[in-house]
Length: 244
Image: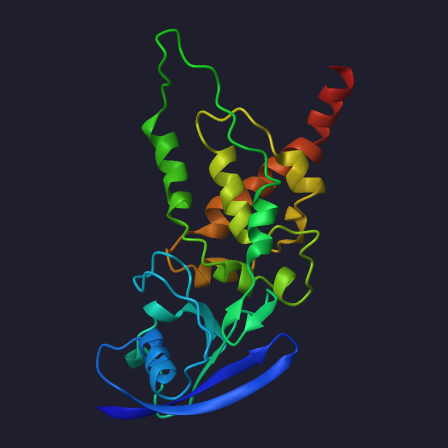
């Protein structure tokens, strides 16, 4: 075994600092393993959220060397262990303690998105869908709600426009509904007026940090933007609505 140093944020909202811990690391360990060892041996009161330890629950989100990542999926052998490894909480949400943040805002905003509204079933009680339409929305179902995309989004992280912009995760959720082959709802008014899709300037940082590899910008946000433009800014459509 070799030793590595970790700089971990300790403290509550508005009050805290980094503390340094040196612990032994072994081949195959991930960041969460090291944090657990530090918690067990040196800092019993260290607050850290985790659950599955397999990259599927999205609980252990944090910022490792400044990059939003899952601690359970970040292998130590991918980090420069000759330098201190910095671990800090996500910056887009209120800090509770140490590495734990309050992400409940996301669940509240999710309730404001119009629910799935399927078209009536056929006479035989079935719904028919083309496979390519089904495949299109399957990607969005991989989301584990780790909120790393929300954390890296500059609209939320730097400008704190939580009251005006729902963020990448909720746009992916909206896209899964809008593009569902059975859904009859139309959410472009909400996206334009309430959910702030215009704030996204498609830097693709959300796609970069997604641990599930969802192509958030190209496959979800841009198609939603196109629908908003069609419904609200297309001059021919406006003219059609006037004379309809």
